[in-house]
Length: 345
Image (cartoon, rainbow, N blue to C red; front, top):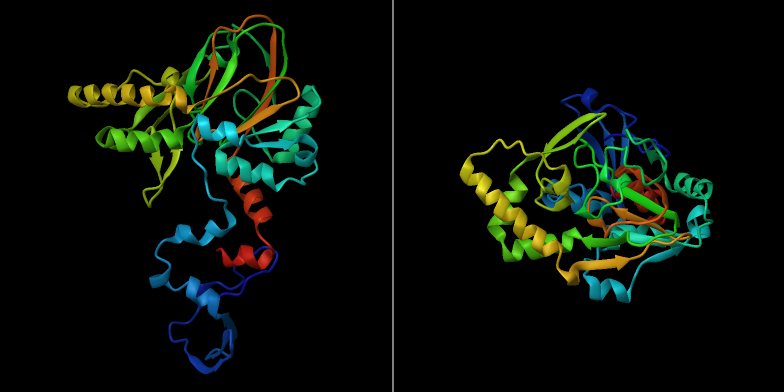
């Protein structure tokens, strides 16, 4: 019944104001649509395909509607991802010519960007071309070296186990980009782990423990110059039971527990099982970051780590991005036209 503004795709008529006794007084059928003359003298035309998609009994699973605009996800281990490591070119991303950039991230959880000019300025320009940079208490675009005065392990020279960033924020950043500008020492290699693939293994091997970590909410914190605490489960699912986020950082996990001793015992056992799976050699992608190549990854899906103590001078830059901007760009690029976007609603 509602009309839509074509450019905004927003309702132009308020359905709340439609009279309760409104009824059709004339109906005409064509091959692909139906025309209705209503009792308030308003006329409507409905495409049959649209009606089928929006008939409640046929569309109980709302998530199906937009799948046509999203590529199929590929869950990986070391053997698979070494054979088809996702990469794109800097100029293609900067000039918005690369659909592979967005699709790689959604399919694999990450992509490398090659041939970037080795400067913070060029990297920031690249980041701004990707989308709106997410601002946090760390700032927007970061450019940093090892700084032991900072109260965060990212600025240290120590090894950092596999984790996701921002477990202590209410809305965890979706994408994270790193570009190593300079390193004259040893150590600091990066690893990626497909946490969704590991979650499938965990659910198969330890179903009760997977269920526990999906339901049990734990405190995650960042303390020092700031005070941030969020309570959430490690495995976060949507209303249909689909895994949408892994929130795991054992370094930021609080020791405050709102649980009885028996649950606490089961919790520690479960996170040990989970930790063993994500540290299996076959689940790691090892990579040494280098100047001129950025890594951008899905922080809701991929765990990242820094292996070994880092020596020498090391300069890194990068930023965070939010989910809505990324998915909006992805769906627009994967649609043929505005009508296809409209039909996915």
